[in-house]
Amino acid sequence: MEMHRRLIAYATANGWSSTPHVGYTYEPDVTDLMEVYESMREGFATEHGHRLTVNVLMLKVLAEGIKLAPRMNAALDLPRDIDPTNYDGTLTPHESINVAAPWHLPNGATLSLNMRDCGNKSLAELAAAAADLQARAEATDFDSLYKRMIDATLTGRVVDIEGQLNPQDMLDGTITVSNIGSICKAPGSFNLIDVIAPQTTAIGISAVQRMPRVCVVDGEERILPRSVMPICIAFDHRAMGFYDIVPFIDRLEQIFAEPEVIRTW
Image (cartoon, rainbow, N blue to C red; front, side, top):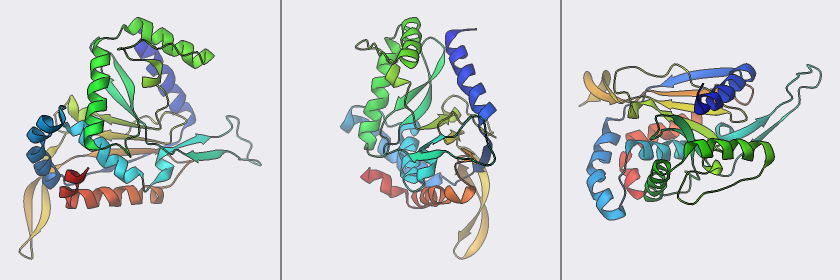
């Protein structure tokens, strides 16, 4: 098995064996959001020097929601051997929203790379960070990277190489966001996605799809074709219940209903 698959196999097997997953598929209407995005895209690249992608936009949208749902961006530490008389542990919210985002790399592998501090970065800063990761991925010796990452995990010794991906680019993610819509445009959606301990949440974004929706037009209900983006929210049921993610969903609903706000980001 290739090194990158072995690393993924270890992380996911550990997550599924220890984490009670709950999955919820949220299907927001993003018609108006995508119209504003398309109107911004060309001028954004001219002004900031980097493309505004749907990936970058959605990282910022999700981060705005996560700010209101701190249990989604936390580390859960529970004893592996559960004593029912002393079920103790800690849940520590993170100050920064560091998104572990699966990235399709030039060598054909997929690894989660860390988009740091998505909550405080502007859209331009996130676009620049994504472009930097992509440029360094294209220059990376992956055999060396895998060895350096394992060494950093086991010994704490970090060896960085300028201009390439480094261990910290794959470590310290606080929440996972995977966008299969960037590689697969077919209709469908995530049913569930791996929560990688000690993270408490993973989010899977599917391609924007045209679907019939009931809309109110001039006071009357009509069925119209609309753009829908299925979003799977998977979370560790030990860390939170569904009520803990409701503020996250409410904030996204607000953004999708009033998408002009993204121009201020």
